[in-house]
Image (cartoon, rainbow, N blue to C red; front, side):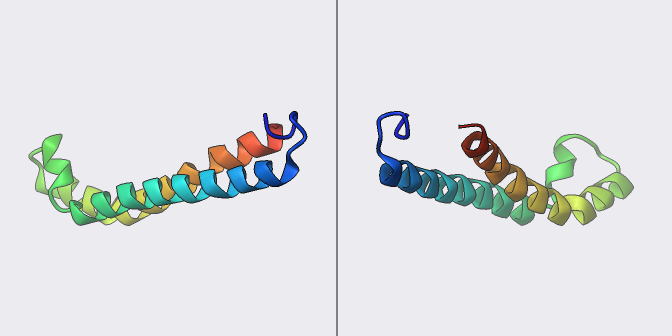
Length: 80
């Protein structure tokens, strides 16, 4: 919208702000997942082996969450 209105500096600023916001939101969600990694799986299973596997995979899930948090923003900027 800002580019269409002829405001390229405002558009660039909007991209930076939305990237920061998206990154912060996904980092907070990743921290929550990492903080509760040992108890998160017990909401879905009682098995200790499955719970241990989920706990081991939580860092990968947190990293994926952060990367998937900012990817749609970059994709939207590229399309725009």
